Image 1 (cartoon, rainbow, N blue to C red):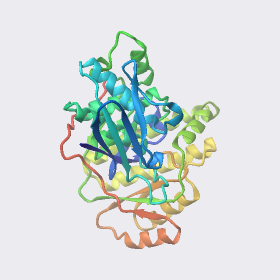
Image 2 (image 1 turned 180 degrees about the vertical axis):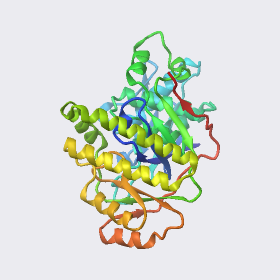
Image 3 (image 1 turned 90 degrees about the vertical axis):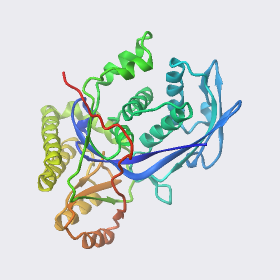
Length: 369
């Protein structure tokens, strides 16, 4: 039996701009996980998780390819992961095996509501890890990320795939998305193999692990209101043409802001990091005002206002619209009064820590033209 886990994530800075290739964001992996258990099977496999209410759904192969009846399939990210990885394995000359998968998630609360910690990314990475382990393939963080990115691209995801980078690498990372059109063109070329595509440099891709200052403290507040990243991103995309030159300026300002924060990490300057977080919050609020998209909800504003009253630098995380907000403190600051004030506003302090893989390759990927 094989067990493989992948952590959830939160965006710290650079949201929305990161959807544009080459525009950086800061993301952190957290110590809440999705765990995939894999057990080898004989003539048919199965998938079971809370997403299917604990019901085991069978899968088989047709013409040598993974097959599950779409009328029974709530597992699009998992099934596409299996399909993609098996294509990769066949290119490497492996004979394919059957297996049973069981998925357990810590990325929801006890009522099943999502915290917004990137469950689709984590389940993709954990599934890929488990299958590669079954075939005794030594994987790197880059291999996990690229297989997962191709998987999500095949599902027409409109995200930046930063959650995949966080779940692959762990810790704090500076990230910018690759040129999706370039990867899609490579995939459309029938002469290309998945293995060849993975070995190439992907234009604009940046995955740079960062080391946080020792006294930097991350706190996470959950508003209790779930948000749809896909819907919010679609709304911003729909409004881009109406914002004329504003969006171009937003991208430039966000780029400069996030690079400032990355420099502050390298300089171990907590005050500078906090200043960058406040600037990024202002940029996102301007984007919300210009586009009409509700990024910083009333609950998130309460979260940020309270945090600032207690010397924290706070902002919405990810697409906003609900879910979580983040606060960066100096370790010396007193946080209990802030947490009490949050509770009075119905905001839940999530007791999560930054997660860093014990053994991983931390070779950065930084695209250079």
